[in-house]
Length: 141
Image (cartoon, rainbow, N blue to C red; front, top):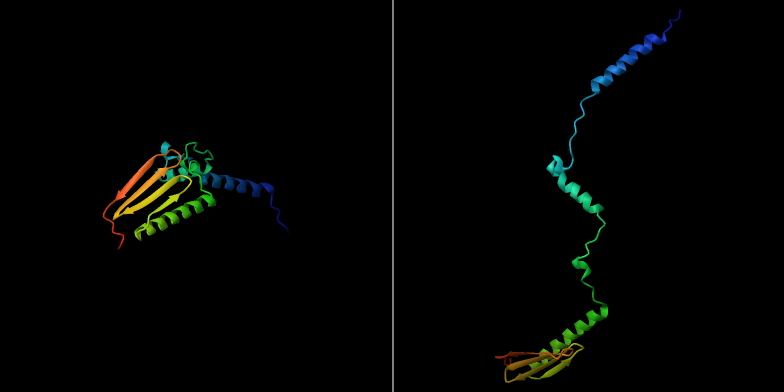
């Protein structure tokens, strides 16, 4: 003879068991702030700041990086060439020769008078001059 299991005998105990388990697992909800300004863990501060900075797409209008402009290849070559010519001019003065270098911006005149080196620099745009005198040089060294 087969035994019949009724719906009530199986369903009602299973339902009460499920309700009892859910009640046993429930606990109080406790609010814990994340932001350290509102009582959260102070170690979260750097994490929150880095997240905010990564989302910030505003640019500083007074940024110094906008003020600097990269020189072109021609400007760099011209500066290098002028530096090389000035070095050659100073080498020639060290050998007892005088010389002059004229660029777009300056006129540089170097004269050696018996160990007294005179460098006269003239600004071509404004006409201002600067004179540098170095004594005690001996061209024979």
